[in-house]
Length: 399
Image 1 (cartoon, rainbow, N blue to C red):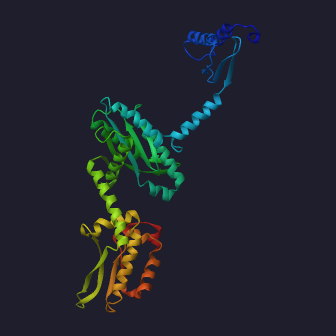
Image 2 (image 1 turned 90 degrees about the vertical axis):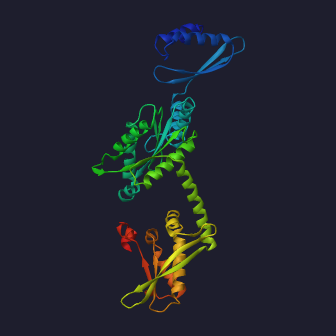
Image 3 (image 1 turned 180 degrees about the vertical axis):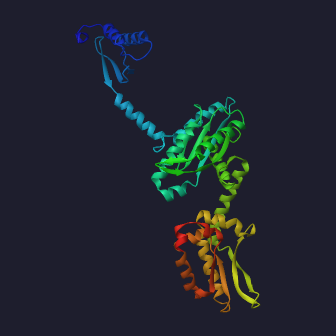
């Protein structure tokens, strides 16, 4: 209270503050000199004063007429904490508290600056295998707890210089800095595999899961954050295609294949609208009766440039993109229309893909095709693959 009396020298107030340890930094004399210099400078100056108790003050030094000055101290501790929390939330995943895509990209930009000085940086893209099945069967709450557990394990595999983030869903990315050779990357990948594969005990429920990993390396595979993430993503999809639970490094051929696939998808959509498809009919011969008992409808795509394209090339793409529903409906109607003019004892067989078989509208699609063409139902045979019967899916079981 005695320091608040008019006429108290500024030096006494500053020495009191330093003596009681209120000032948080290690060089109190520098703080003393800076405050005295500010007071004598006759200019406005703002600063943030950090106190030893963890609080922060915003100090506004404002000169007044006649050579005096007013120093206003405002406690901004809670404001700073709120701002820090908001900044953290903007850059971190709410579920796992890992860096999100935005923050991970910022971290990768910083890592790539070291590449210019001759270092190598690896990006590992991870996707959990069969995570959707766990989510669908056990519920999203169990899936969320599993993702949190995976995040903890991934963190434990890294050095202090490496960064792991969650890109969304069950996808994670790791920035591995200061890579000396490919062995450093494969060693890390093996640690990640071992960590993720170890059984999880979640509220008494034992779960097992695996992961597929794709890798891109700067500067070999690019020096742009988005390009490196995209290339690692492509390599991860190759790992899944090669049987899951594996690690694959990016190769330029992967990008060319993706571009070709995108082009084929565009052409496939154009082909459906442009009626470039045609059905061929393969006779089914009854050896006992020595006659044609039916015909199997075979779909062919007459590409304007590449000629006939096998279903093995475009059917999987149609299934992935959802175009199989439209294409399958056209095949059913076209086959039923053709068979309507055949002899009464000759049936037509149409293949139904696993994706179509799961579609709850399949029955109505078949009914509509028969009704539109006048073909009796007994003359239509729907053929399915063994893969459909192995899928323990509710829609399949009901069917």
